Length: 123
Image 1 (cartoon, helix red, strand yellow):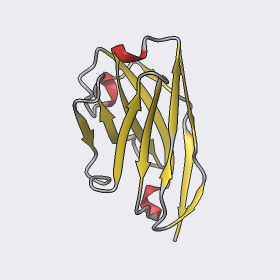
Image 2: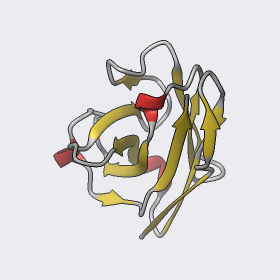
Image 3: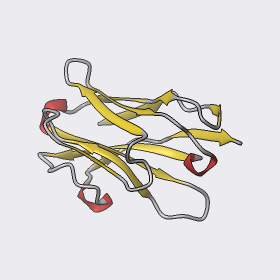
Image 4: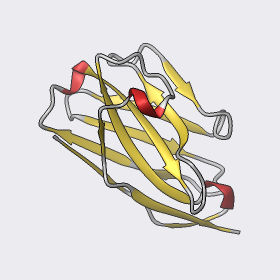
């Protein structure tokens, strides 16, 4: 099983960025997907999650109204679209998959994790 994130880069505050996570080795539609992030010295923080067929989406408090999660089951890919970025969004962003999961925002509910992609937002 592989989850490969991409798209992280240096951004200016106020900007827009979309990441992607491509999954292989799993039947993608059987997995709820989520994004978490971790900044230095902090715990993993939930960003967003999405159910298997996109019927429900959940967001961490710090990103509500700014980030949108989506998925394309035909491409085995999940995306967060991130707008109004600020320096507090600086972190390594991780993609995670939960088999037949409910798309919770709890880290322990996820079975597989990617290696992460760095997003840095300068003021």
